[in-house]
Image 1 (cartoon, rainbow, N blue to C red):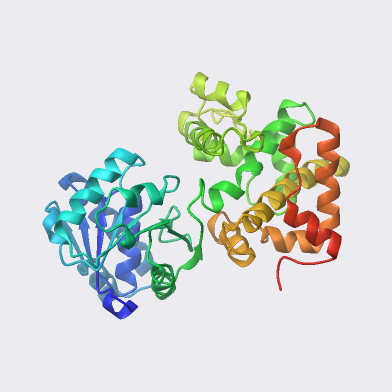
Image 2: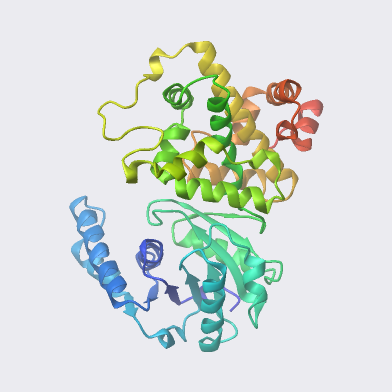
Length: 393
């Protein structure tokens, strides 16, 4: 297959929330879809959930009844994996376990033609490693949608070391046709979003551990800066078991770089079973009313500035390093953070608005205070600041 026109039939492996969401996106874009799962119950649940979504869209006037019927009709649901044999693109959306994904990829390869593109929706596993277990690794790629897939516009496209050179562009065009905002990321831990976003949580936890401010104050400071939720609200929503696990994974994957060090404070929440909203308690106690105790409008301006500038500077530094290390272009980094995690601005645009020298000074000040390599300024950020350059042309 050389053109998007050849991508006629889409296969999805896994009918959970993510797989079902991707099937919906493809079908809404006019594609025929085969949604496979070993569990008939999962497929039945997927059908019921899609029906609810379509009913809401009809009520809002987003689709007509006929269009909703057509969208559902383009998705064939099956427990028979051989129904995937004629697919031009297959997206794997099963549990985040390398061994399970390897077995899925091996089984898919036994069924499909050697031209079929096989993509993984993994958020953290190595695409290069997955490709290495395939007979035709050149057709393997990462296609990371964000949850909920039908609503979140970002898709990270991650070529493996073995991926044929024209495939990222082909899938970029296809994802644009599906109405998504695709970005291309190098196959490194966390890709773009899960790597660049680490300081939003990590530096907030560090500020808390140092006693500079309490949880509600830090959250309010970041809301005042334009973020929809503070870092502790967000980790409570994500779940501390999930967020801590990702942090620990990134820390290990980067050979224990102090920049990604997990927090013992968060570990204790996990050990206590205080996982956030889903358990009724995390940083906040959700059994109590009015648990957010600081109105951002009543913040001490000096404290608000200290918190927000420190966290945003560390985010900018991480974004700069992503460009410096060839993880992604400046444009794609900014798009990823805007579209994948709803940041108020692209981080590198933000840096240019502040002035790059200001960011460098904040990070150098942290390094001088703590003497830690955690607070090392990105070489690209320092170079552009010294030369009066910009990330964006």
